[in-house]
Length: 318
Image (cartoon, rainbow, N blue to C red):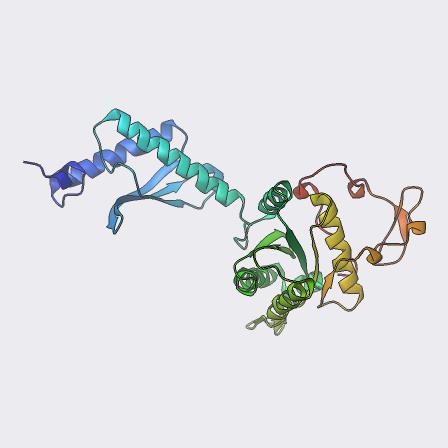
């Protein structure tokens, strides 16, 4: 007589093996038919929370990277078609969530990407939640790339990302998240509450993050020791759209670079050019001090925009 474990496919004998194989084959077929991807592996496990399936799924949206999906509350095996349909439906939701999470991660560093940053900013603005945002740009990254090659430069970006991932929540009491938007451009978004930090305290903590980046050193390269510094511009969100916020941060970082790089600067309207210099649609460049036609993407928009629609920040000199 079959035990409960046998019926669930948990038995060590042939009966349990057969039921596990039957479940795996049925699951693989349903996944193919419902475009959930390819089932690469299917294993049973047990922990303090009970029985679970550990599935490795190769999903077309995720490229060559399989997704390991842990199923904690699903029927390990059931001959009931309705229960099996629920298992497949729950699996679909888990896969979609995994795909969504992957799409919001930067392909190189694994940090939340520009799309994730947009969502966080829009959510904070929409909920009227007080927050601050810092734009972190690696100084002279093009020179680093030229000297050490793009592969080693990518290793440096990963190190910077790991540093931000560790220091941002540590220095800001788990109230700050790091993002990797484009190339050498990173962001840290922090909640103003419940920490209630003053502007000076935020600046001090951002300076500690800057110092941690400056202390990164990679050896083993033919071109010598590989290091970098970063210029950081930040401001709190008192008013304006996401586009306005990003524009002001670019101005702040440009100001930090003009002052010698490797420093933290809070945005101030005085960084903008005197209003007399803005006329007839011209735009003043805070880096080189010249005027020119305002590019189409620099026009202020009346409402919120997706910052991923903007080109990467262009700062010269880098």
